Length: 139
Image 1 (cartoon, rainbow, N blue to C red):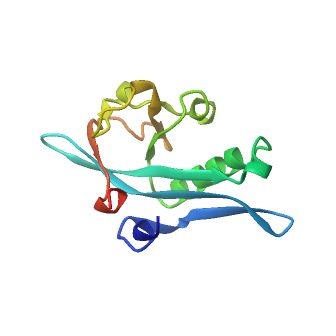
Image 2: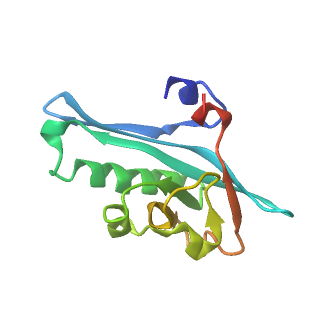
Image 3: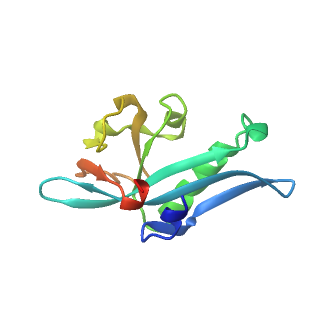
């Protein structure tokens, strides 16, 4: 994660923490990525990770972080977020399978775990292709 923070993909406003009684309870990080096809390249974001300390799980902290990062990302002019995550958790925040939008990840994972969300109306209209993560994701 430190490599991502030092990369061009890092957006300081989209690295957020949750505190409970002055104690760190959770964290979310959203960074830049590209979606590419044979003709076009599109800007998007990657949500990874969202984490909540075990003693604070099940209290809605992760959901609050996700909703807040959606608002901030939209305010910063971003239109979409892509993630790899639990197929039963993220849909309640508006995520749909990425292949619904014509988006695929660059590695073999179950389709139901590859998701995307439009932060703005038609934020993924006309977007299709394969996600290209910053190289720091792989280092």
